[in-house]
Amino acid sequence: MDKVTIRKKYLDLRINYDKSIREKYSDIISESFYKLYKEYDVFLLYISNKGEVDLSLLFRLLWDYGKRVYLPMVNGENLEFYLYEKNSQLKIDKFGIKIPITSNRFKIELESNSRIVVGIPGIAFDLDHNRIGYGKGYYDRYLKTIRSSKFVGIAYDFQLLDMLPADENDVKLDQLVTEIKII
Image (cartoon, rainbow, N blue to C red; front, side):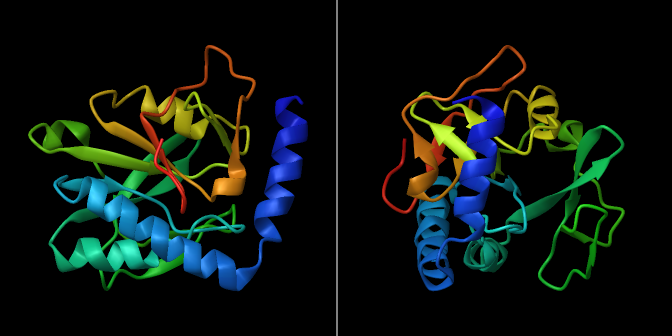
């Protein structure tokens, strides 16, 4: 299958995934992610949209232990991350995604002594750490600017395929966390 076909099929599956199962698995994934990366300082994450893994439990765990959490925002052709705190107000952007109302943008140069992990959503993933997103390349372009960080895909196990088509613009992930396994 090509990327367009995979994107359509797995986005539809993710959006229509049973809500109660999605909630249960989201908590399992959040707990696994936290246990793996609790020693890290800075977390670049996302608020779920269109059936993505819900990281609400992960946010609470991170805030309880004083970790810094940032959320993505599209600015032109680029992705930027902004501070997300326990009491942050959110607004809906042009893509229907919740983003924090703040001017505190993540800057890699200010975090040079921090351990940084990027939790990345996607539509499909494979055993070789490739991912398919929405097709605009925002994450791939952003990840190329912060190579010293850990890149972790966050997904439900049904989103994992043996192999995906990938090209030179696609950035490989370091790890993938699902409700069943860590690859």
